[in-house]
Amino acid sequence: MTGTGYTETKYGGGVTVLVGAERGAYPYANSVLVRGTAETLVIDPSLSLVGTAPPADLVLVSHAHEDHIAALGDYQAPVHIHTKDLAALRSPAAMVEGYGLPPDTAEHTALMLRDRFHVRDRPEATGFGDGTVFDLGSRTVTVVHLPGHTAGHCGFLIEPDGFLFVADIDLTSFGPYYGDVGSSLIDFEASMRRCREIDARWYGTAHQKGVIEGTVDFQERLDAFADVMAKRDATLLAFLSEPRTVGDIADRRLVYRRHVEGGHVLPVERRTAEQHLSRLVDARLVTEVEPGRFRAT
View (cartoon, rainbow, N blue to C red):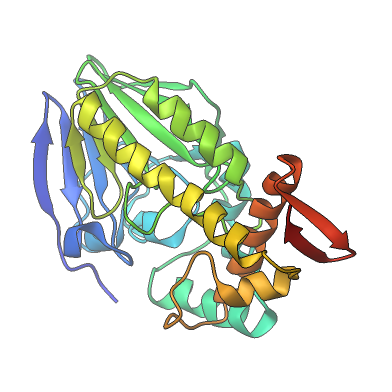
């Protein structure tokens, strides 16, 4: 599968958002090109860039998911990602392992990564940490670690333009996703709070919502995005009016709608349910009435 092309939208003096097909909806995503006086970098080369990727001196990856690296093979430039996602970027096998899928689904996913998303080993990729600054000459890109979606998920603050790329804190109605093995509901909440503290002119997302201008609009959308977590809590509490197991909750579904099928669904639902249960038990809103069975207090 090749890219279907992208459209360019410029922000400030050196930031260009490469808007993916279908407004960046999965399997596509929005990429960002940043030009300085000395170097140019690209963030998250997506499927829409395959075969038409613009030149860049280095590549930054917000996190190790296939829709954010599908055009990575078009670049021979140095590739950088947060150290906590480095193993998954270097090895597709490690990426698949991080999804926590049953064996038959994992095998199918590995083939999909290879054939649909062009994912290959990148053993030369290197890691960065929170606050790492890439100086492009008259323009800087600063790493903002925003874990939760994955352990190494990051945003990037581009100055002097005042552009914050928040990647998969994407503000969609689907809500926050924290269903991988290394995901964390608690970290995701902290990352959203951190985003609220960063004053930027533009906030760029990796998917359909695109770029939001102004802190007020961004924070309102961020609150609505975060509210999906509260709705999942409320759904779970109502469901626990009588004792239920994690399996029961996974079958009820907190994340996916009933029509969604696939081997990934129940593992994601179980991990999501376990995280919400843990938080609600800590808050004394849920109790374990017998081993493995939970009820709202």
